[in-house]
Image (cartoon, rainbow, N blue to C red; front, side):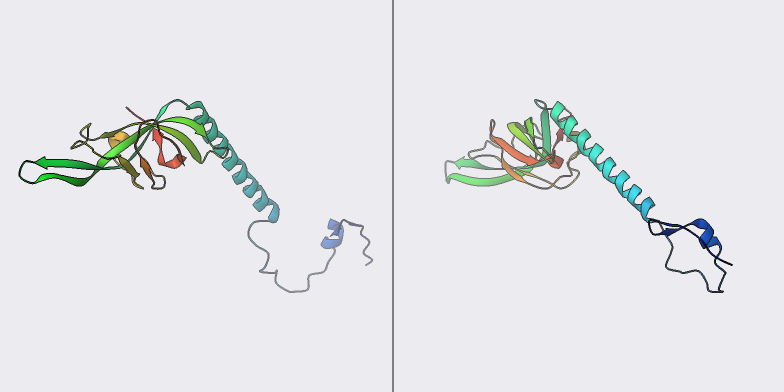
Length: 178
């Protein structure tokens, strides 16, 4: 039997492969799983989905510029307690709270946002005692207080001085629900 087949681009014509006589060997166990093309298509689909999600996040953030955003955490400050017998004593206080800020800008990748501090809030609506120092806000990497919304982003510490402008991780903030 004479085998005549034309070779195109390193592949044999189907007729040539079909003409091979079976030699009794088992098929190779090394050929299994996804074919390269199928794998490449899945990777491309995942990349396109990730790009669409990023664009959606960027558009959502950009359309929210000027809106109030919140982050859950703790407010820390110094309070002064005065007594006629002892005089005045400064005491460090930390209590659960929320920082409110207005969204002013978004980074090109949408991972960081620029905010301007508006104010802060506690569960009681005010600080337990009058602050005699700057108020510092520390976010938490937890679900926080469900009535304020959820914050799962990285922890950070920020002065809670109204008007202060700063950049932060977008995942640490959400639109205020109230």
